Length: 359
Ligand code: PMP
Image 1 (cartoon, rainbow, N blue to C red):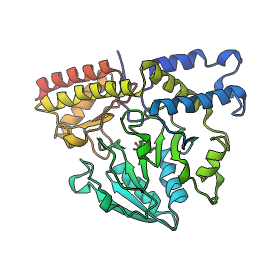
Image 2: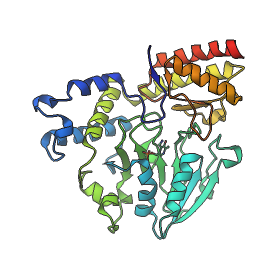
Image 3: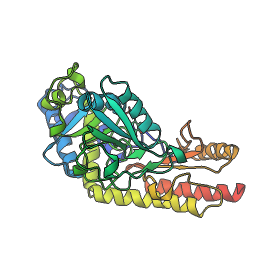
Image 4: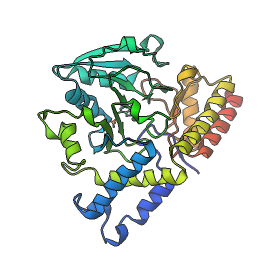
């Protein structure tokens, strides 16, 4: 049976990447060592991390005045690190679009000396849309405006990045990095846990405009962006194997034709599923059409028992991890870059059959 993995993260990785990693597993480029066994200060690993950065810069068009950091602690540590580095003694503005934005907000509130203000929220409609943000809503003295470009659980995403004046936008891009047409220049800082569109968990990518690096050291060098940047992410031992896999994923993206091609494929895959939901008399998308995510697509029947039946039957057919997040129920298909189009086609066919039998 073919298994299709709809997991929201850690998520499906490209088969060619896993095969390359397997081929190189015990003897990397004639070194008689695995990348896992190598010193992070060796020249072989130095090539890997430099190449990973170079490829990511090419793919995303990251300008020279931005640093790329390969860190640990997940996107969740960034919820604290960002206010700690950028907003002590200042105001930090947040947009509340759902579960992940809320976590970022509460972590920032816990940092002494940071004044957190939520400038917009879509809670009034259960986080089914992205609220509009205009320049006049933004205190131009604030340290940053934090947005969550894609809410992994709610399934909404920013189609365009708002103009907030000169205040830098800080973005949690965990679940739609490398699956969007945003311009890096529109952000002051971008961060993402790797385990969706980049590679395995354990690696967190931070892209930070150099002028936002703190000038005064903070209490922990590990939590200090300036220290991490000055040491090219090698202040301590970085997640070496995860960085290696990320490099292979970046090579895979380039071989496919780069970001434009990947986004085109993501749009086609998402359209297949949204069209099927829209044409159905059984399945409903809870999300406002204008803010639909390409990468995380929730849907429901409106009947919990029927959702449960669908999930059980889907699982038996090899559609894994389709069950919606425990906080929302129903179903959620995460269609990251490595998810194959055939998997969406088969899911759509299965949904039609289920509707015929149960509609
Ligand atoms: N932000 C978003 C949008 C996420 O989807 C996730 C993880 N699902 C996180 C943050 C937290 O990431 P991590 O588990 O890497 O801390």
